[in-house]
Image (cartoon, rainbow over all chains, first blue to last red; front, side, top):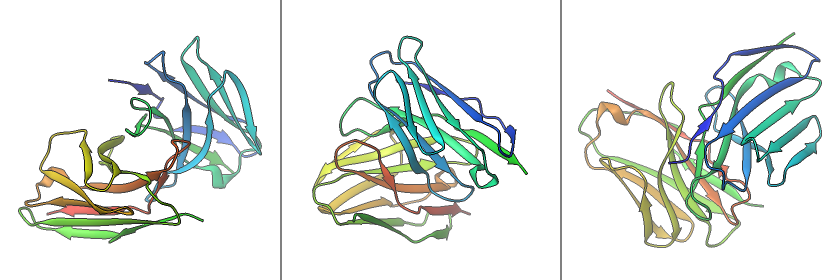
Length: 112
Length: 111
C-alpha cells in the first residue's frame, strides 16, 4: 500500500512570503506526482504535476522533486490570501488507470 | 473542453435508505472514471474506478457499489446507508493519467 505523508499544519505564512509545502512518499517506484489545492467545502483542483527530478515552474508555483530522497515539495512565491487552502500531494496508486493515493493535506494560511 | 457534472450537491438521508449519486463527463470519450470519498478529518479515499462501460474495480469492501451504464456516466449506489457513509463524495476523470479532474462533489449526511 503506497503511502503519502504531509504535515497537516496549519502552516501560517505572511502575505508576500514564500510558502513551502512538503510531501514524502513510500514507493520508490513512483514516477509521477501531483499537487492539488482544495478550498474549504470545495473539490480539489490540480495545480501541478511533475515527473522528473528537479524543479518545474508554473507562474508563482514551483514543484520540486527528489526521487532519491522520495520527497516532493511545492513552493508558492509572493503568497496571497487567496492561496489559503489545503494542499494535497498525490501519487498514482499503482500506475495507469487505478487512481491516485492522496496525502491528508497541509492546511496553509496566508496572513494579510 | 471537457467538463464533469456531479449531482446532487448536498444530500441528507436517513440510515437504511438507498443512495444514488450520478456523475457525467462531457467533451471526451472512453475516460477513466473514479469515485472518491473524503470523510471529515480524513484524506481522500479511492472507492471505485472504471476503465470502460460495465468495468468496475473496487478498492474498499463496503456497502457501496458503482456502475457505468454508459461511456460517460458513472453511478455510485447503496441499498442501505450507514452512518459511516457520511462524507464528501467526489467523481473524477482522467483520459491519460496526466492529472485527474474532480467534479464539484456531493456532501452526504446520513442521519
